[in-house]
Length: 278
Image 1 (cartoon, rainbow, N blue to C red):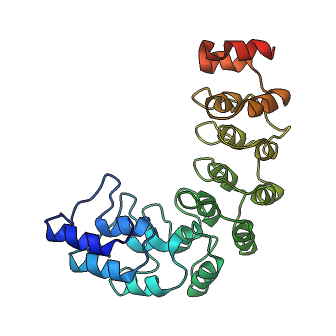
Image 2 (image 1 turned 90 degrees about the horizontal axis):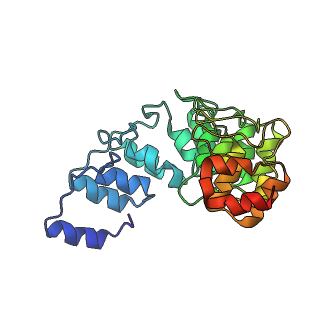
């Protein structure tokens, strides 16, 4: 997790097992990759302990090169893993390749290099995602900047299209912490704000539990019902009740959210709040 090789060696000397696979299907090698370790000395050690890069896949069929690609900035690790049997054009079980995974990391220079290697930037996976969806997913605790989306758009990647689950890149974006510039860009391209996922969520419902008024106001559209609920009966207002501030509740109510929905989703917990705004 931290490339603490010295301590790893001590643990192994005391009998630590090195062939355990976790609940997500990550071997020790692939756990190092998915957590962003880029030191080949670490990988050399793991391979010496018996790791087999070309054979070890997570539950979704991703190998170490795919998993580490959001964190690499040049071809050094591409060539390294190729030397250990991983083919650069390998895909996971959904048909996502190195360009898709690298898009999560947001390094446009590396993505340009991959395009020059022959990766098609507009390739769509088996479940309908393109590089824009992966860019919006980003990596844990990180949101990509405007330059990445402008770059992908320049390559012809459709940043407005929903995947098979009904999620647009914008919807993946609001699950993180996108800048207002990114939101302006994605909505300016014509993203359908009324688009709903298979679970019945739209971007506003997803964003209302954690984002500020400046974000939410960019996601409100006259084209859809502000009181739309997802398949679990949750609306933007009830999501805001669970996790956001009183200021956001006030903002949503002023824009047409119905406090009556709170009775359906939150019971008597918000009785006083609902009465106050009726």
